[in-house]
Length: 113
Image 1: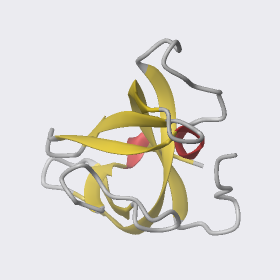
Image 2: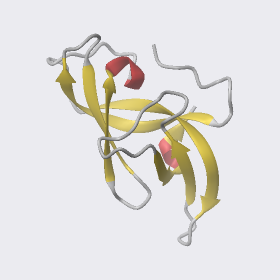
Image 3: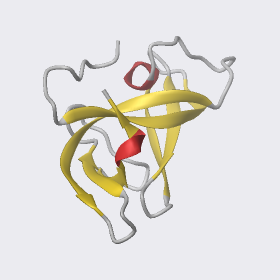
Image 4: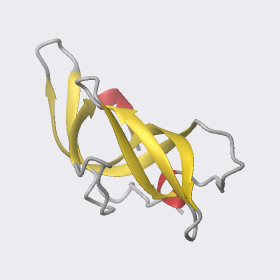
């Protein structure tokens, strides 16, 4: 079950794409991707229930939409007038990208409740 974000206004979900199944270790692990506000692609690998309520395995269709819980640390307008959110995926679920990063800047439009 995906963590609830309704208890804290700073906790949101980062919209992303689940791109492939990577491991059968219980309950099954998937890779998900998103693009940050600078256009860099990031990959997150974790148990599928972190990203979706759909039951996934190696026969599921990919890519498919998903979400990762995150904490919004700040919001601001960049020099192009875009609303940017600085987020951490280390909270509320301890997670990091395959590059070892846990903080990112994303477009606020990539976040949902």
